[in-house]
Image (cartoon, rainbow, N blue to C red; front, side):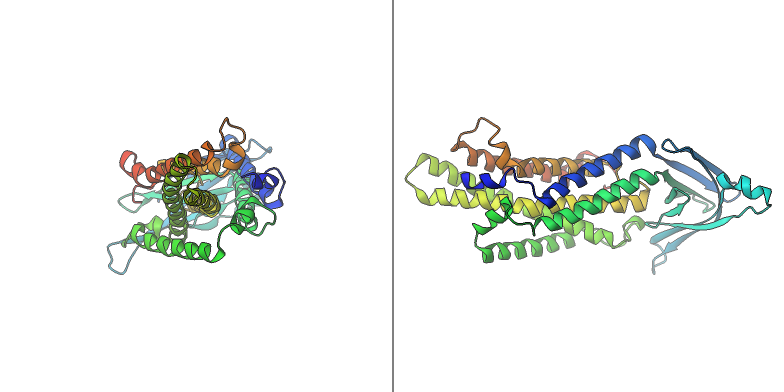
Length: 369
C-alpha cells in the first residue's frame, strides 16, 4: 500500500491541533495534581467550618467560612425517589474580611449546592456528596484548582474542534482511504451504526428511578456517544475476522484474486472506521469528565471504568497509527494485513473488558453501568 506514503509525514492543521489539545489536557492534569487541592467538608446546621488554602502558584491565601443554613431532599412525584439534594449555604470570605472588618462591613454571601450544579465561590468549587440521616448535616466535596481546570477545559475545547475539523481536512490519509470505498456504502454503514448505537443506548441506560447524580441530560449524550464508539469497534472487529480469513486464504492460494480484493477492502474499511470510532470514544470520555467535575468536583478520579476506557482509547490510538508503525517494525508486505486484522480483533477485547469485565471484577462510581 505504497499509495499512502505521501500522507504520512505531512503536517495538517487539525491533526497538529489534535496533538496539541492532548498535550494541553496532560498539562492541565499535572497542574491539578501538583498545585490543586481537593477534599471533603462535613457541615452541621449548628456549627461553622472554615477552609484554608495557600496557593502554590501565586502568593495568595484563601479562607472561606461556611454555614449550613438549610438542607432539602427533593423527591419525585411518587414521594419516595430522591431526585436532587439542595444545600443552602452562607459563606464568608475570610481572606478579605480583615479589610472589611476595619470598616465594620463583613459581608456574608449566599450560595446553593445541588446535584450536578456545583457552587463556585472565590476559587473554591463545592459539590454535593452526602448527607446525614437527620437531614441536619451534609458532606460537600470541594476543590481549589482555578488553574488546572481552566487549562484542562481549554484542552477539551481544542480537542473537540480538532476532531470535527479533521474530517474536513484535505489531502489526508483518511480522505484517500475514503475515496477507495463506495460513498453510498459507507453512508449506509454509518446510518446502520448510529441506529444500532441508539438501540444499545436504550438498552444500557439505567431505567427510572434514577440516582440523583444521573438526573442530567449529559447521561444520554455520554452513553450515546460511547455506544456509537463501541458499535463501530464491533464492526471493525467483525471486519477484521473477515479480512483475516481472506488474507490467509489469499496467501495460501496466490492465484485467488477474489480473496485478495476482500482483504484489501477489509483493511481499508477498518482504517476508515477507526477515525470516527476513536473520536467518539475520546469525546465520550471527556464528556464524562465534564459531568464528573459537575457532580463530584473532579474531572478524573481513576475509577476502574474511567481507567479502562482510557486504556482502550490508547490501544486504538496505537492502532490508528498502524500505517506509520508497520514501516518501523520488521514486518513483510504479506504479513502486514494479517497482523493488522489480528490487532483489530485483539483490541476489541479491551472494549469488552471495559464494558463487561470492569463491572464484574471491580467496584466504583460506575457500578450502575
